Image (cartoon, rainbow, N blue to C red; front, side, top):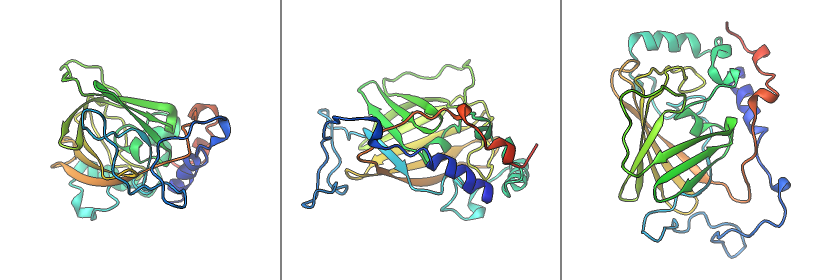
Length: 254
C-alpha cells in the first residue's frame, strides 16, 4: 500500500496551475451569485444538439489503485491464472514490474483514473483526449471507420465511438496485452476490449461507465463506473516521466 501511495504522490506533484500563463481569457463558465463556478448548471451542447464533453476533467481518486474500487472481490471474474497473478501482485511486492514504473503508458482505462487531469477536445469526426499523465493522447473516431484485422498492437489501443442519445460510447481494441489495469496488478491480455460510456450529467460532472471484456483473463465482462469532475481555472502541463524518474530504485520486485 505504501508503494501505491508513493506512486500517486508522484502524479499529484504534477498538478497544474495558471502560473505558466498570463492574459488568460475568461472561459464561458456559469457562475453562482458569489462568483464560484456553478458545476450543477445544465451541460453545454453543440449546434447539432449533442452534449459538448470538452473541458479538463479529473477522476475521483482511488480507481488508479483499484479499478474495482466499488465492487466486491468476488465481482471481478478472474480466470484462474489471472487470479493467481493478481494475488502475487496486489501486496505491492511486484511494483517494479508495473509498466508505469518504467515510464511506459498506463493504457486504457487506467490512464483515465490517474491522479492527473485530462482534456477532451470534441470535433464532428473525432474526439481527442489529452492526458497530462505521461503526456499521452487518444483519438476516438466517430466517423464510422472500423479497425482492420491485421493491426499493430499498441499500449493505448484503437478507439472508435458512436452516440447513443446523450452518451458517447467508445470501443477500444488492439492492445498489446502488457498493461496492468490498476496499481494492484489486475492483468490484461491482447484480447482486451474496453467499452466506455461517457455521459456529462451537468456542467461540472460526468459519469464514465467502463466495461472490461478480456476473455483470456476474465470469465465474463465486468463493469465499473467512475466519476469525473470538471477542473476550472487550470491547464495541462508537460509530464516527461523519463526526465526525473527516481521511483524505480525504491520499488520492490524483479
